[in-house]
Amino acid sequence: MALTYLSQSHPWMAEAENLRNRALFLDLASAVREVLLDSMRKAAQRPCPQWLLSLIHYWESTQAQVITLNYDTLVESAARLCTQVYFAGLLPDRYYPFPMTPLRREWEEFSLRSYKSDPASFRLFKLHGSINWLYSGSVSPGAETVYYAALDDVWRPSPVLELGVTDKTPLIVPPVAEKVVYFQHPHVRGMWREAAAAVKCATGVFCLGYSLPDLDITMRFFLNRNHPGNSTPFLLVDLRDLSDHFREMLPQHVYDLDSLYVRPDDPVPTFADRLVH
Image (cartoon, rainbow, N blue to C red; front, side):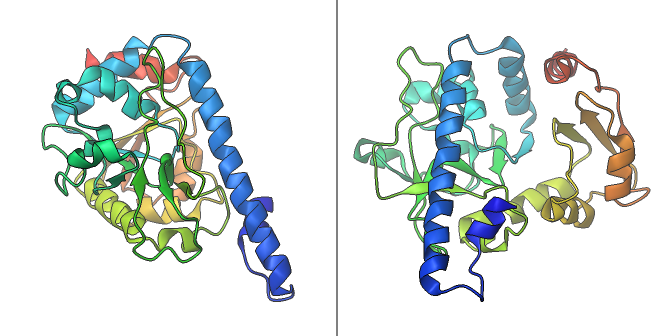
């Protein structure tokens, strides 16, 4: 609620006060990035877990459509360890459904390779943005260029986790109640549209560690309006059995909810192991 308040321009406030709130909001968005970077550094102190590598191999072999609301780059970092493409010097933005401009000049030869990801790869829809996607921070981004930074290799012996720029801010959709203004960028809107098309064609949905909060109206509408059809398997992978909550949030007789992978400890690694084997 605090972030929502700071992100909006309120009619009872002077413009100077609204702008000060907006500046504080951008500072907090950058602070979110710093917290995530610190968490990623801690994760990188241990080897990449085998279950994650196995899951990404499975995603690649099945050309899975992967939708996430997370900002971190751990999936991309793990994918770097799994695929042969990196031996050719290519970058993991091949998983994203739109091209981006590399932030570092020496990467320019690899930019804008193709609009679509490699057909042999999984696709990664980061619907709430990513800490390695950068833009000016404008409230009206329009068709502004999105830059890609090197935050995708945390398991390297000396990972590069710094952006090295001061005039850009992460393109992330913050945890606010009203997100409409952040969905105006054509890249973000296009990502949601392609993710919707992927859900409509799905023969099954696996929901890993997402609880569909009551206030996440956008995601509720997204799942309601883009369901594949009647009795589509929807398997919950979580610490708690949230079947009753999901039944309240989602249309009846559309998703066939299943709590097979709900368990009080390590549900995602257990799920990955069963799925792969």
